[in-house]
Image: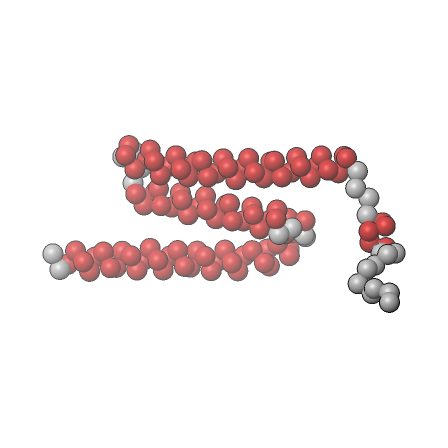
Length: 125
């Protein structure tokens, strides 16, 4: 009995050409992505450890910095690992803009309601 799950003459695998130069480009891109995301994470850790104790920035500024850096990391991950960066500019905007607006709306609601709850708690003291 002949197996039908084996594809012997697959044109995709025959036409796939992988050479060392392409491998170097892919590895270089992965290293660059890893270094960039690591650098952003280190900046976030540095902000969390030193800025709170130093008192140079307000806590609201530090929270806003965390939010912006996290959104930058998320957008970069989507652009690189989900291959959205290879698409046309208009398609990127159609996909990313609604999410960005929704995330900004959620941040606004969270901060506004947090201030409202804080004012309510202060009024009872």
